[in-house]
Length: 331
Ligand SMILES: Cc1cc2nc3c(=O)[nH]c(=O)nc-3n(C[C@H](O)[C@H](O)[C@H](O)COP(=O)(O)OP(=O)(O)OC[C@H]3O[C@@H](n4cnc5c(N)ncnc54)[C@H](O)[C@@H]3O)c2cc1C
Image 1 (spheres, rainbow, N blue to C red):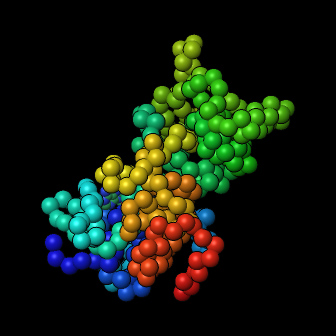
Image 2: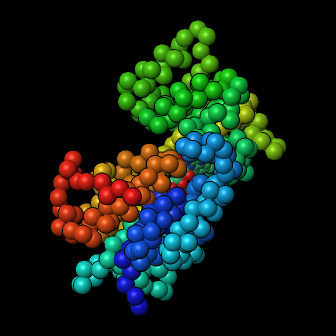
Image 3: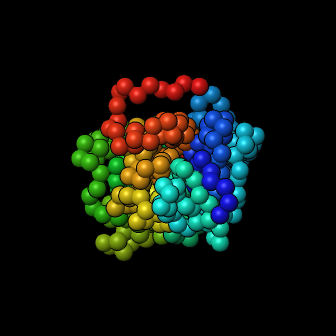
């Protein structure tokens, strides 16, 4: 171990890159460690239409700019470097383990993101690329299915909210759920059922049904459905499949170091993004309460970086409750 960094950022997705831009512009000695290549999930799409201020962009293009910005202001970036463990050292610094290497910092911003939970059926990976028909985000991709037929999979709150949202774009939306009742809150489930019961509704619900394959040539053309009670199978024509069965946070490597929810999301106070370990902030899709959007991941990175200043100024602040009185640092 050589230098002690002011800040180590784990993960070079939108949250990590935004944090790095701010910490390095603050002249904090910053190191970013990324398991693969920079970009995170957004690298997988060439169509972004909901990033405020930019009418249309693609993931790799946006990430290249964000990466260059962070590097330009002095962030050191190591790619192909998977963080496997963190420890607090006796001198109060945080040691970050990455393959054979170890780095130390006064503070850490955790931004390892999450992955969409997969159905694991044939065709899912093949059609996952943008425009081919498999999506995990209705808010992101709904408008691309205007006038088309889509199948949604899931039964929780997100599944229902996203399905209802899709009925505003798609000509026909079919929600399949493996159980015969929804896990989602009653109010949402009722709204969904009311919508489906309207005579001119474009929403169909199929209970006790699972998808066993996603089929097509270049793009999705149908999904194979199976009723798990009757065993009946059918090829169900559609242009897209939206999978809303949850997120899996990339947090195995910090189990036991910071507090996690039972689903593995990093616990924090959602105003200042402090974890239970002083000096360790969290940002983006890996945290409890994340909105799972590009813009909110970026916003988190910025908040965590700005709160880092507050922590360096006044370390005791870590234990203070969230306050209306904290002055924003401005730019
Ligand atoms: C196909 C697709 C399309 C999308 N389209 C949109 C859209 O149009 N609009 C929108 O708002 N949102 C969209 N999203 C969601 C958006 O991409 C995410 O909300 C956002 O990327 C979250 O950013 P993040 O930095 O928190 O996490 P991530 O993007 O997941 O980045 C985390 C990074 O951390 C790295 N990492 C993980 N573990 C480790 C480790 N142990 N050590 C080192 N590095 C690690 C990962 O490799 C990754 O690079 C889309 C997502 C997908 C998959």
